[in-house]
Image 1 (spheres, rainbow, N blue to C red):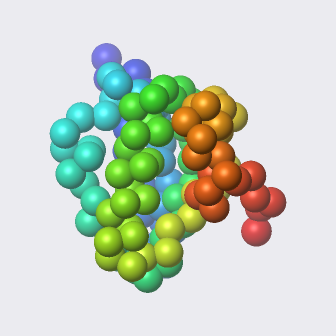
Image 2: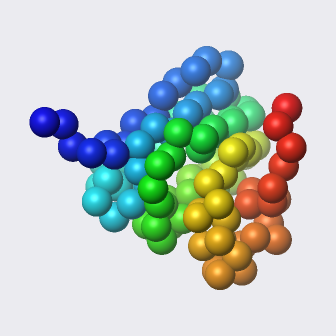
Length: 107
């Protein structure tokens, strides 16, 4: 039996990536945190979170780490289809006013 909710970052080409699985303490490990190379693969990166089933504060912490890394590489990072649970965590943390966590219409 495979691990439920295993986290995968899927390269969809042209700077578009999808996160598939859960963004939780159980699925995020040190290898996930270290796998930041995808954030410097293009000058503009879009991360689709529509396939994320469950999330917790570890998911928010990972996204903040991605934001910091992308900023250090001068990469424009966008998240789309952020799960409501993650938006609520961002709001509790005061991050909901940042351009990363505002609800955007789909392109």
